[in-house]
Amino acid sequence: MLSRNAMVWDTSPEIVNLGTFHLPFPVAIWGIIVAIIAIFYSYPKIIPEEKSQQQSSTWKFWGLIISAFIGGQLIFLIFPSPEIQQIGPIRFRWYGLLFASSFVIGSFIMHHMYNKAGFTQEDLDRLLMFIIVGTVIGARLGHVLFYDFQLYLQNPLEIIKIWNGGLASHGAAIGILLAIYFYVKKYEKMSFFWLADRVVVPVSIGGALIRLGNFMNSEIVGQPTDLSWGIVFARRPDLSMVPRHPSMLYEALLCLFIFAIIWYIYKHYENRPPEGAMFSMFLVTLFGGRFFLEYLKHQQAAFATGALNMGQWLSIPLVAFGLWLLFRKVKWSTQIDNKNLK
Image (cartoon, rainbow, N blue to C red; front, top):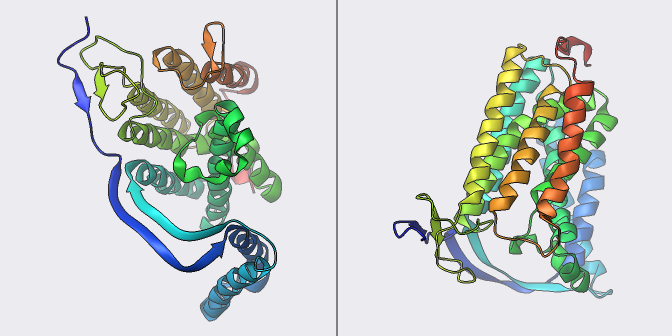
């Protein structure tokens, strides 16, 4: 018998809706992409790095943006391109606010740890760009490949419509690991595991905030339950109006628990934990917990083999890698000397 005293969740996922803005002229989508690429490659050459010259280069910065945009649009006056004639409706959602907040809070945490290791704000800014790109691209492609591949195979343009939702945490994990790898390879100031140990600290906080955003969106809901804390998700008409496990909140609590564990390790070793200790603990606890929490979730993807679903299959190799690091790689009696990193 399902509980009749269950909480009914009917809060709007939107903070504010600004409506639709109509553009004075159509804008070529491919032209915008060309402009972004041009800015990315031209910025280091046009804008000087010396602080003494930065104020005088403001006009160059805006000139680069405006000329890249105009040039990109002129190209696609000749070549065909899909166009945007309106922007919107522009909606500010709780999920977007919490997602962005995870990067802001994460940057403060990383700033603290980078300072302890003697690195500069410039080093952190470079890392942040790698992490943001890796997270967003990895999470999106993870959703495309692991959960709705056939849909996106038939409608490839839908892949770039990230505003319609569809991010996968396993894809984000892979994207972040690749971002760390390329960052370490490019700048060669620290090892992969040294950096991964510190990145997982803000990632655990970010995971909790993002799962709270999933709760605001009434997504990643659980199976029906008669427990007293079951929640009826009234904004999900595709589900029967019965109390369900708030599985996204379980994961948020799991992420906070993981944060407490790895932060304790960081402080216990006086900001110099053994390489791989925090990273391996993160992999084992997060994806090990995810494996079991998947049994409480409403099915997200059609793919399943036997008793395991997609999320569980994706968690197994990450847990196995974490266990290998934990017992074979980590030297628990050794503290890393941050002075030898640079």
